[in-house]
Length: 152
Image (tube, rainbow, N blue to C red; front, side, top):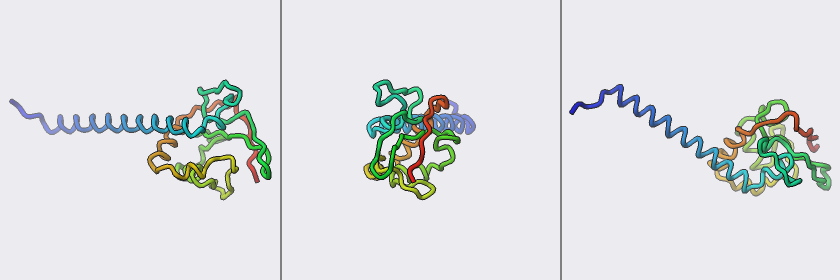
């Protein structure tokens, strides 16, 4: 019986490695989707959610409902998609994770107290990365964007 050649072994190893990496990435996104769902991120950041008709085709692209927060004013769940103009597209992965786990934005301002960052501070690094991986795939619908003034 003939032994497989070194190039054939290398090609098989590369294929298996790429397949495993794609599977792991897919698993991370699925884990993130699960975490975003049970954490209630869609509740405040998906249009139509509070009217019983969430637009999951554009999940996390911003709410159409605001909350009156004493001492802060009206707060509307912002667009969390990677859109550079109205979402988090100019934020690094580290800045996004820092914001949702500490409540501090890249510019140093605190997020509204309605954002459950104190609970999200307990996420493991793997779970934070998975949530981010899912959010990075969120589809932005510019036509449905709500303009959200930032609290001062």
